[in-house]
Image (cartoon, rainbow, N blue to C red):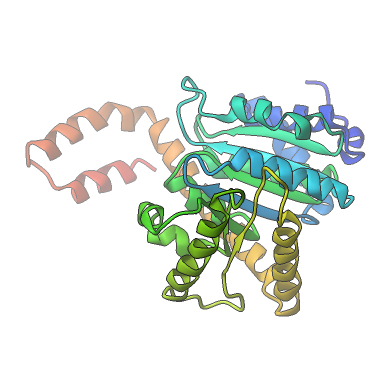
Length: 319
């Protein structure tokens, strides 16, 4: 296989970056080896960005917000990468391809890079591909990486575990949609941003801000940072600068309190442990002896002829 030329990637060439990400996402063993080699080489050039996770209730205007936020950051001299994580079926297509067309202006900018990150496939799912893609984007000189979750549920937890700042977008309104969001996701949030705070919804957004602030205060937050609640209008680009100001405030405080680097190190350690588990599972599921004995063991468990623990031990013995 032809060796990968790293120089264009390090110079910020978008085509070289896309090619490297394709290698990372490939299921071919030869591509995976080459991808790991590239990742080892880019490691010293990575880690220089601010990683922001963005999620939100359906209809909150995530794409509009990300486009307005991305364009504002480009105006501030930043280079922005947008990675959309979609845990849904690759056949259904999720909303990723739509996102790229909805972020039309942003995707045309030389300083922006938009990429869907598929979770389908073996090893690593959402987390591995997105984490590796983040490293490549950082090596290519992107200052801000926005990781957008499309699904609601497990992907939020995975994304929160790989970013520096986790933001939940909300709609103006009562507390109804607050009930719809898992408490755990609110505990992960570093900020709630109420979008669509314009026109007739402006007063409603202000009321929601008060409501959400008191709801957030009920949750225990142990870190140096008290999660904030803000309003903005992505459509009219109002308060987008204040959202970025808040992220920067978080970043400088985290660096000052010496928790920024510690958080990244902890995330890398968690990632390694997760990969060990997934590699063991992959090794087990590709073991012919395990595949032979599994149907029989499953049937024995169903028929109460053996305990799940005893069956699991027999399978693990094949390692």
